[in-house]
Amino acid sequence: MLRKPKHLPHHRTGAAQRGDGRDEGAAYARPVADPRPAERPEVEVRRSARRRRTVSWRREGATVVVNIPASMSRAEERHWVDEALRRLERSDARRRPGRRAGDADLAARADALARAHLDPITPDGGWPRPESVRWTRPMRTRWASCTPSEGTIRVSERLREVPGWVLDHVLVHELVHLREPHHGPAFRAAEAAYPRGERAIGYLEGLAAGAGLEITGTDDEPGDEG
Ligand SMILES: [Zn+2]
Image (cartoon, rainbow, N blue to C red; front, side):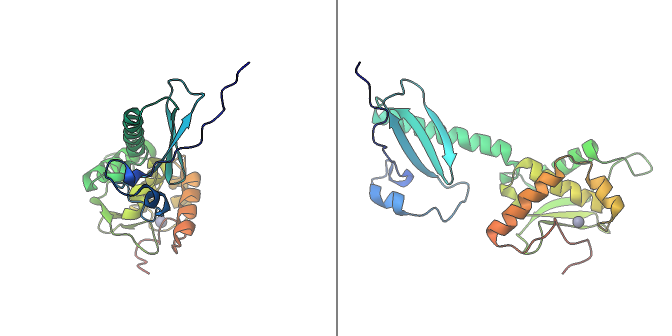
């Protein structure tokens, strides 16, 4: 029986070369040094004779790999590469809600987290409510900070790129500081009400190590402006 070849040679498409007439070779050689989200990622198109109609895509590191049937035209390839990038961008935005969030979005998120995870503590049964929750320029030694006396919370712009559950851990941590300035047992007990805290701390440790940041823990205790 005649067997079809398992794979045709991979066809690699540098993102930058598509449609803008730039040299194709240069597109692969360029390292992905700047991971800004708005930037179009490197795309690698793999054509397979085994595929009939299905198209799939996934990330491999900084590269988006798009698998298409060998029979597809260039126009179809362009269509599916655009489609893959559009859908990945959309799912990233869902998973990384900080990306486009403004201060008001951050404050609303903190408010919802306080309602969901923190015990009512004010005499009228409210929850710790910050005066303000704002993004702030990336800090060298912490992910966020809280000034309980002013009721203000600041979150490092670095956390725009983390998954929502990691951002949420940081927000809960800072909300708890509104009533517990120090990282004592009462603080830890309240913070633990957010269920994915341990995993979030692990994620942040990995992020700090990877970026060469001197950040241990979520923050310094409020008032320690170190
Ligand atoms: Zn803290």
